[in-house]
Length: 596
Image (cartoon, rainbow, N blue to C red; front, side, top):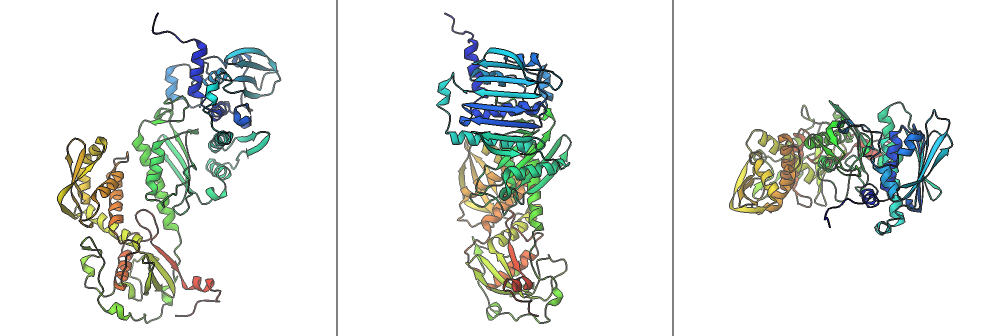
């Protein structure tokens, strides 16, 4: 007997259905995309039994005539393509010509449709892929598809279904994604005869405003409130994003939506770029994101998986750089725009500054890390910095409003000052991290990054691909103070590290963190340098719960004032908090601040 044989159609059709129809939610996704391709402005969905008993989708799209209704359930039937070259210029969702055929193969289906011009509609009914009834129907413009008893002829498939609650949640998620991507379309979704979601069309007249309003309706006020808008347009690319600000991220990653030409996609490039932009987030926090990307059809390929959820870009690096760069810029701009309350007028400061305390007059032990003073050499002979002067130096940042009088340390983490009759607080780790970051960036820019040789090389084992990636960037790492060489077939030897670290530093962990900084798909020297130096600065800076003396507090304040951006650490976390005189008076319900 021959070993290779052609499968019967009944067997093949059920296998093909498994590629497209994994669960009721994937069935609904296919039907919604067909409705949207038909130009529908209203789509109503009703389900029973979590979509297994019945699922009905009704739209007001262009509809089909008798010939098309008869043909729509046939294998490889499609209205989207005529030639293989059409795949490179496709602007619609469905194109495989397999969805309705695959759905019909594992269910009982009824398709009813009519065009706007026809005087009568047409209906076709099928079971397990075999048409058993056709005939006229009321001339209601649009298409209604009713799917009943999903997987009735493949009972084993039902064993892999999740609970009704899980399947219902998946169904709602599909409707929400479609609603986000199509703000001009009205969606209703009913489950067990109960209205679950209802989205009226957004008609502001501005496409971006429509997206924002629909996002607010889908996500709700708590998640959507305060989202940062991002707009960008490049040749062949248009992007609209809404992302969480740094200080308002939920504890779930399930609120991230990525769309390419209105198609919901799962993209590691998008997700990695998003998280790259946020840097080091608070533990357990994840950004909300709604990203609408419009590309030329030939710039990506959705024909990667039958479910059309995965996507492949022609240039992953370009997409990564675009997303991460724009999000990082938006976060930085939002952080810079945050008000830092401080005394509005330096002119109200009295002529005489408070006298320095006795402790400030004497010597204090500087804070050392790994044998190197945290503060540069020029500060070792200083008793007090410019913080005790009466007026801010020319060109000082807005938050710098002397005189400052050091009051103490809270939980060995926050430095507290009196400033112009108000309170001024520094996060000592974030502030020191910013100071070191800018110092190291300046050294790296001048090619003068200081490093220290290790007495014995430290072996670091990595995957071969990571080893090659690191070695390819060895010169850039050397500019940061690292020296690495290949060792064996799949490892590295670290022979030098930046001198800001102590020799007892966990070099392996340090290198792993630096590898994370160079492992993104963007081969961008400036971004690599920023991320790696931010990692170095974070590891080397004064930590929370380290004891600092009064002199060190003043020095840190002065160095922060000299930074180009002292308001946040390189990862975006704020360094300072201020309450001016008027704010203190308001908090204590006093009529006004006392005159200094």
